[in-house]
Amino acid sequence: MSTKQEPLAVRLRPQNLEEFVGQSHLLGEGKLLKRVILSGNIPPLIFYGPPGTGKTSLGFIIAKSINAEFQYLNASFSSVGEVKSILKEAKKKLELGRKTLLFIDEIHRFNKLQQEILIPDTESGSIYFIGTTIYNPFYYLIPSLISRSIVAQFKPLSKDEIITLLKRALKEKERGLGEFNVCISEETLQYIAINSSGDARKALSSLEIGVTSTSKDIEGKINFDLTVAKESIQKELFYDRKDTFHYDTISAFIKSIRGSDPDSALYWLAKMLVGGEDPRFIARRLIILASEDIGNADPFALVLANSCFNAVETVGIPEANLILAQTTIYLACSPKSNSCYRAIEEALKDVEKEETIEVPNHIKTYSKDYKYPHNYQVSKDIGGFISQSYGGRRKYYFPKSIGEEKKLKYFLEQLEKIKKESNEC
Image (cartoon, rainbow, N blue to C red):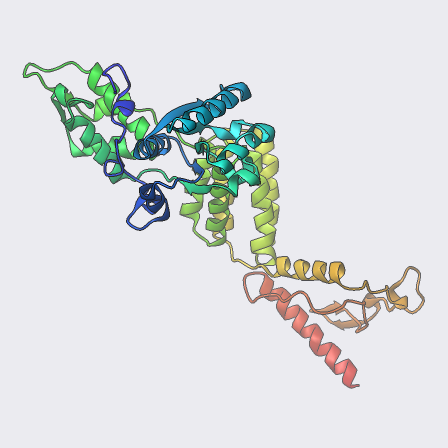
């Protein structure tokens, strides 16, 4: 039973699925997780996603729905001995007809050997098990635990879902803030919701801080305006440089540049910079992109990207933000060609999978049969050229008629004509 001494986010925890807000992709009508919960036949569960999205709350609801004792552990502070003790007690309780749900928060903190302790009991059914983490479990948890579990990804709550929770908190007297007679505008609620980054706990905590720290006016009302909201909420960005959010964000950044959308690219760049991403990591990815996605359509792109990396190393943050932004905009607005990328990929496949071709005798070191192209002037546009074999297996480079690369395409087409004419002769 909650008390007024507990934080608002704890007091307002949903008591059943009907009260639960968010995660409709998991708990909507007909969705697998909801069907499993309603059936009462609960397999091991792994919940992962950002903080304040309802992972622990859903654990409480599940324990209540199957009439099981809720045993909470945080892997950051718990030992193997504590886990073994709970597993041992759970077996004794089961003999007496009492169920136990072991809920391990931040389970990624357990190493492989610690995780393996859970396997026998989850397999035998002596306990119900839920593990939660903010990280992608496929990177951190052992395959034997994942294969026995339903893995559910929790998403940040939407603005409207956060507002629903805030209004519930302001209305409820027993568990919420209904007794405070708060006067708050829709604009202020939206401000809190938007700046909570989908974290219900953060939104409710900010609301509670603002309400309890603001004096009542002469009419006994608490005027919770935008000023109070801005003072009560600290905007934090959930961004982890070592995991899924790191890779997803850099992926969105690169794909925005590849898609020639400088505005989206700048947004993802800003998110990484605010989140503390290493600017050198971003600059390295820009170098790769300049060659992979722009290539000879604008050869200067690679020069600029390389200069960006050197400049970032020299000046550092915050000045490096401007350099990264300039390079990002240029690359996003450059003509795109992946011809170079495709060419080397195909050549590598041939070398790796097929028998290596021996170097033809006439282009070996000091060969007397080699024809020096500069001795054969074709035209002022092409310069020295003579048709001879250089031993390649097949054609790899197919330049596009884009940007500077169309000049290379035209050049190669002229050479093909010369080769054809010389063969006919």
